[in-house]
Length: 421
Ligand code: GLU
Picture 1: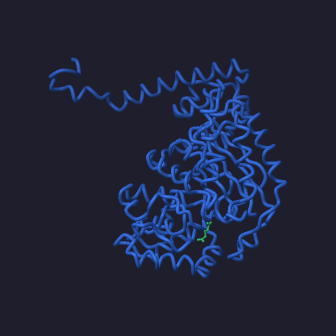
Picture 2: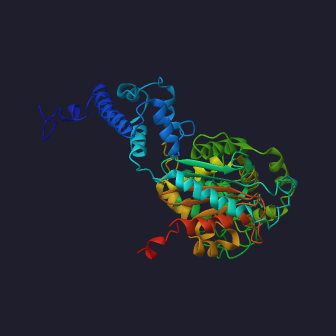
Picture 3: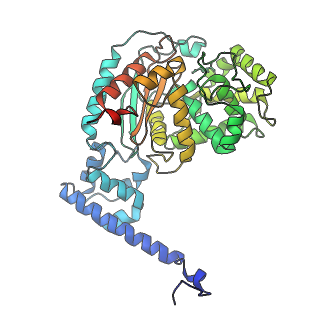
């Protein structure tokens, strides 16, 4: 019997039964696993230790890449296609094959890492700038702290310096607040209440656009507005947990936490942000169902989320990868939302230096007062930096230095293509 035409049973036979599908999947994985074993052999790494070493050299240490975790459960010794098939998904096997065939986003990861290390060493000499001091926790940061990390769209990772010291993200979290608000409310609803135009003013200036909305989600008023749209009917603590869960998934499942001291200091010194809330309230800018004071509270919690450079780089990698986390392989953010988020990072992400940064670096990025910076190279990967000394626009001095050198060393500027050849 065929499954086509007017056959009344077509809908029953058109789809293979579950066990048939499972068997077909397993066959396909087994083929992939055999190809992996062959490729490993021809690359001279026929046993598990050799394969793991080779992957690590390519930037894919299975300890840092959850989708390769199955490798760690295999018995040591020579590679066996059946065992690989049992422990790894098709996606993981494809990734390993790409690594063995030098087909990853960055094919010569060792060379790439050493060039990044040179850029890092060069930027370390930049010691100008000042710490943010509007709250004691930021004034107490180590001015010399300097960390950097990268994560490609294939999950290749590298980290240098103070890359495992958590710091509060402050405004670096704003793109995620915006992305989460979009995921929960849709584009039309969000942009009824927040614009998408650079403000041309300070990030916390008391100003709204001609329609009475905050200019964009990358400045304080716009980020508070986004916070107001995150599940407004729930208690703030639950809303904050949802946001943290979202951030954590984009960071490959990293544990996040709220820096309680930062959160409390932000609340205690909130006069400007309170004024922004009053201004927006006076203009009826908030959605009806939201409570502006709770939105502000959620915004402070968001600013106080602590994470290290390695995890921030995975978030940048998720954005570079259109919303699929490169280390877990899970879709965290819809690709259309990522496109919107990157557009606004490009035009509004670097305070009053956004136009200059878009011109000279040409990459979507977001900085924050604690010295954090995330940079996205669409379709390639993400970078994160942390260095607390800020320039007069409020951007980390070393972060700007690294950004400029990155696009000199690699063709990452989004318009680099037109200058080739
Ligand atoms: N918590 C800071 C504020 O609301 C964030 C500033 C920033 O990183 O731009 O003013």
